[in-house]
Each structure stands twice: as structure tokens, then as C-alpha cells.
Length: 278
Ligand code: BTN
Image (cartoon, rainbow, N blue to C red; front, side, top):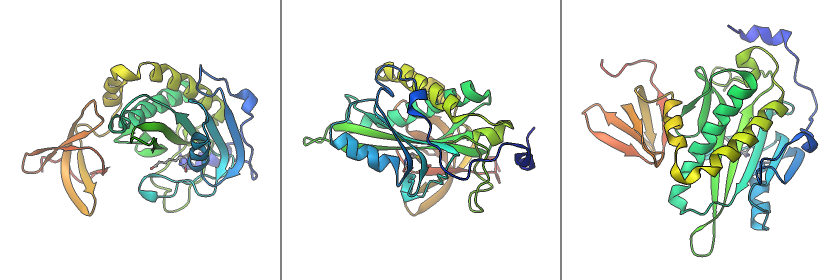
């Protein structure tokens, strides 16, 4: 058991930035063969987009110690202070139609869970569609953005991954809902250990991308299947029960009147006030 106060006994994050030494990053095949490191950047996704448009190869990683405009889904900011997290964007050039690219987010979520478990021996689970949780707190967000070619096919995918790793004190608006790998396991976990495991897991899973075999693991790691949730779709918000996630990465929910709906995108929150049978 670990309590937030124990943070006082843990190594404090450095006041100034310290980017991970690129020499410490071990590539796995093409993944991480080229790495660009920044002490401070607005958003690694934006920089990776520039590089991808300029022809950077599959597997290139942009890594930053700190982001001043880290982005999440729905244009939310992603808290990215110095010395604390892994903020990285990976350029992928998969041969697949844009609508299938959603499976890359699922693949990355599985890779992040495996990497956290390998580095810190703490269980990580996935909240549909792109968040990784330890217990009931978010430890990582994933933002995949597609760049299309002239004929509407996928030219590249920018896979942005933000993992809170070092001991962290979060600002008020996210203090109750966010955690870091170190906070969750009660000891300082080096970022180098997490990125090393992450690169290896991404390379292993990407090799099996076509048969979608990682989707079984994605479902096993889901922290929403079987639970009462609220679905947010545009301005609409309704209660439902999460039933399953199909191989296309869509969430199947059952609404209060028993109707099954397949959600291709959107957002859910877990309902702690109901088990849906009430
Ligand atoms: C989310 O929580 O909705 C996704 C967050 C994704 C954050 C990562 S950090 C590295 C990369 N650069 C960004 O600006 N965003 C992603």
C-alpha cells in the first residue's frame, strides 16, 4: 500500500529539465533507430508531424523532457512537467486504410501496459479507448494522429504517448485522477527502464499487427468491460453498461432499454454510483 504522503520520502523530480540520454535508448529493429531528444518542446506530436512530412522513416521517435503545449484528445492539455514523464511521439508508416488505424491505439495501449509491468511490476489496465490506468488513476494517455497521402490513404501515423513515471505531485484539477508509475508503486522508477521496455514491446506487437492477436489482451486488460459507464457522444451523455470491445476497437454498450450500441469513438466515464442493475 502506498500513500501520497510517502512522496516526501521519495526522490524529488529535478527542478530543471533533463532529457533522457539518446545513447541509452536501445532500438528494436526500426523502432527507435532514430531518436530526436528535446529538453523543452511545445508538443512532440507536432514536431513528429513535421518530421514525417519531411520523410522521416518508420520508427523515428521524438522525445521531450518537458512539453509546453502537450495535447490530449478533444484538444485537452496533457500535463508534461520537466523531469517527470516520458513524452514521446513515434512515426509509424503502416500499410493499412485509415479506418483500421484505430487498432494502433489499442496496440500501443497494450504495449504501454506491458512496459509498465516489466519496469515496475505493477498491474496496468486500459480504459477505452486510449488511457492506461493503475488502479483507479490515469498514468498514461495516447494520442494517435493520421497523416494522409494525396489519395486519402495513410501516409503516416503519429503515435503520441505520455506516461507519468517519476514521483509527481499533480495540480488540483487532476490531483485526484492522475498518478505516476513511481507514485503507484511507491518507489522511484527510472524513465530509461520504461522507455526501454516500451520500445521492445511496440516492436514485438507491431510485428503481429495484421492478425490483431493483441486485441484479446486489450480486452483482458480493459477496466470497463462489464461495468456501468456514462457515454459521452458529442453533446449527448447517457448511462450504459460496457459489454465488449470488438476487433475494430469499438466499444459495445447496452443502454438502459436493453439496446446494444457500437461506439466507434467518443468517451466514457466509469459510474461509481451504480452497478446498472439498480
Ligand atoms: C490523452 O490523454 O487524451 C492523450 C495524451 C497524449 C499525450 C502525449 S505526450 C506526447 C505526445 N505529445 C503530445 O502533445 N501529446 C502526446
